[in-house]
Each structure stands twice: as C-alpha cells, then as structure tokens.
Amino acid sequence: MDVSFWFLATKNLFEQGGFVMPPLLFCAAALWYGLGYRYCVLKTHNALDMRDLYKAYCQSPNRPTKDLIEHAMKLGIGIKQQQVVNLRRNLDAAFYDYEQEIRQYSVLIKVIVMISPLLGLLGTVAGMIETFDSLAEMALFTQSGGIAGGVAQALLTTQTGLTVAIPGVLIQNILQKKQMNIQNNLAQIKDLLCSQQSSRNL
Image (tube, rainbow, N blue to C red; front, side, top):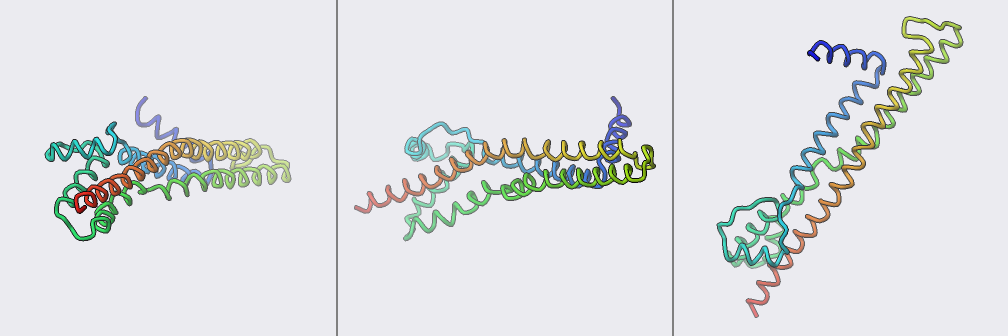
C-alpha cells in the first residue's frame, strides 16, 4: 500500500464524515498523544517498599534512578541530609514538580473523552438533516449523496466519536490508578523522611 492509497482513504473519510471529521481526528491525535505521555511518565519499575527503597539509597547514594519514585526518594534524602529547618515544607516544594507532571494532560484527556461522542452526535444530526432534506425533495441522488450520503455521514461520525472516546476512557482509568499509586508513594516518602528526622532529633 503506497502513500496515494492512504491519501485517498483519508480524503474519502473526510468527504463521507462531513465537517465534524477534522475536529474528531484532531481530538483522536491529541488524545493518544496525551495518553502516551502519561503512560511514559507514570511507568514505574520500582518493586520495593518505600522503607526498603529508603535504606537502599541511604546505603548506595549513587544508585541510579529508574523512575519518578526513585528520583523523588533520592532528591528527598538529599534535602534531608541538608538538615533544613522545615523539612516537610521543603519536601512539598521539591515534590511539586513531580505532582504536576503526573497530572499532565489528565484534564485534556477527560475533555476529549467527553466531547468526542458529542461531536459524533453533531455529525449524526447533520447527516439526518441531509437525509430528511432529500426525502422532502424526493431526490434520491443529489450532489451531496442524497439519502445514502446523509445516513452514511450519520453512522460514520457516530462510530468515529465512540471509537475515540471508548479507548480513552478505558486507558485513562488505568493511568488514573497509576497516578493515585504514585501520589500515595510520594506522600509515604515525605512521611518517612520527616519521621526519620524526628526520631534523630529525639
């Protein structure tokens, strides 16, 4: 299959879907970009408990970091060793970028998942209007495709809207659980480091 085949297929898709196909395809591209970014950010390799991870980095400070959690632990231990006055506040400030990064594109994905079926529904309404116009004029063959063209547009846009939204919902739910797990781990790191400092002060 050469480039011309894909060009003609895309052109045919745009012609059949009507005016809602460009925004739907843009939503699909933005959705998968956001999902891919979140997957890369939320991917974790650490299988250790936070206490075990703390001990590992205390024993081997130069140990390389594999993911966001390990990087946060190494950074937190470095801040703790500086013996700052308010460790909790400094950890909150240091981990703020991590917390922002794991939430990146989550709102965009939710918006796309919500509006994609609505765009498909808009195309459905436009296709049905064209169908009823053709019925009113008793014209089975018009320049825009008549009854057949209107029904095709209605079905195609509905299918495209659902095709964009359904995988987005499923994958986003999985990524949301990973995000909550990372947020819990970051909170555990803060509590662990603060408790270690408090025990030393005692």
